[in-house]
Image (cartoon, rainbow, N blue to C red; front, side, top):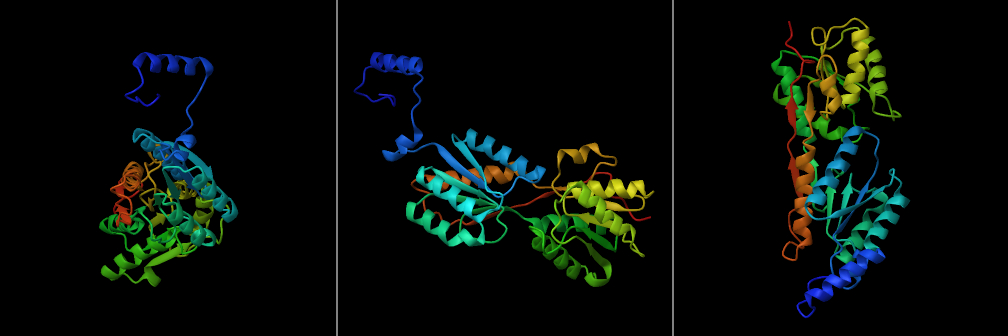
Length: 322
């Protein structure tokens, strides 16, 4: 009756809809799923909301899902394996049309979650997992991103570099270091002599304050590199502010490149050179892949990974070596 059944008279449908409005009745998407229908809902599980770029990704994902005709249910696990497993079980029990796992899944739950998804045949897309999984995945090519930043500095004549917060311990740090190592090898740059890494073990936050602390360590170097590659825009801006307070000119004395292209990068002086993650493209591809997986003809699609190429945004925080 609510779905335009041909045997139901239009007048009857109209009267039923009016009664629904008066009574405040809302059709249950879960009820439709129990009858073998679609819920129009997607479960989104993400590990943490500790940085502006993650918040932007979540907001963008909701907008793109809505444009595709889906409603999103968001759950934050704070990286707790027991919470993650509970959330995925809840989504599976609700018979949602699909799942999006931002950041992938924890090692502890991988086997259990994969088994649940296979058993219930629920389409899933991973966004920027910290490691590789045999599931449909959309991820930023961070190796290419750091290479763009590195090449930009090389073109400006820089030969020695400081890495702020970029090490193997931090999330996605390995991919960035690989990009640097590969390009250094191509350009015949001795990594040990020309690149110094400044980082803390398990910092409380990868934020402006962290950038300031790393800048203090940079200032203590006897022979400071004149080019700086920062983990993200917050670290870059925190470091840049501290270096300016110490009397260094940006980019006259030090060139700095961030990562993420946050809105704040446009409002610092000088405007930060940074790497744009192209969040809209990441989320558009994720939802397109999910939609393909939820259609009968796309179920079991062999496509597993799409790499999204980042873009270099050149500001005024980088300059040619005098």
